[in-house]
Image (cartoon, rainbow, N blue to C red; front, side):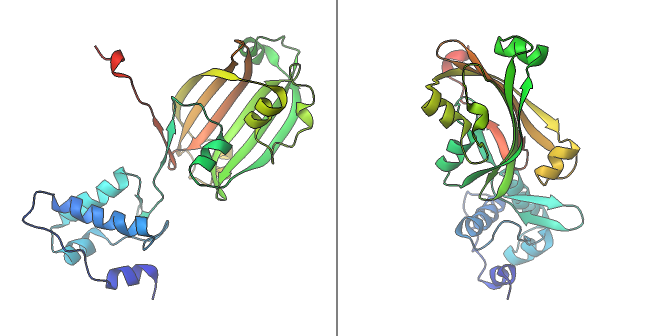
Length: 258
């Protein structure tokens, strides 16, 4: 018997039809409990509106609201003609907290890894030179990496770092080492802040293939310039996070509201 069949065969969650909690939310909560307990896993097919309505003795509209609530909270997604499937809740990218991918995934209890797609020394060019406050013919290291968590592709990152302040940086294998840890521990870099531009963009052909998402799916795009405590820009980076795995999060201080 499959996991889904076993779940369907178990005793249905009893709804409190006389209480104050809406029926659709009670069904949604029951399904979330099965997902969080592992009874239902990422990729499992959920019961249809009709099946949920029959199982819980509610209207199809109520069942539809329950499934919609799951999708809105990132616990499910629909595929046209196939049904609604369990998915891992989106990771929140706190854009007010600067943290590298490796540290971020470890904090979440996930195993980070990288696939190094390109590591090369190139000339800065005019646009990078302006951002990094260096000459256009200065050498920078270009790192193009696929970032994974528990073996799942999560993001694509392209970083440019000037080589003059960091001799030997180009010889480090960044498929195995954290860039920010190396800059901090080997070169004494202390980061003060980052200027970031955040956009929702359609995935390119390369991005969709490497991130294993449908073509033209939305990605969370972050363009970043890292500034040190000495007011020196030391990295320009472009990151593309999977839109089905990430959402941006910001906490706004009440002092900004008038």
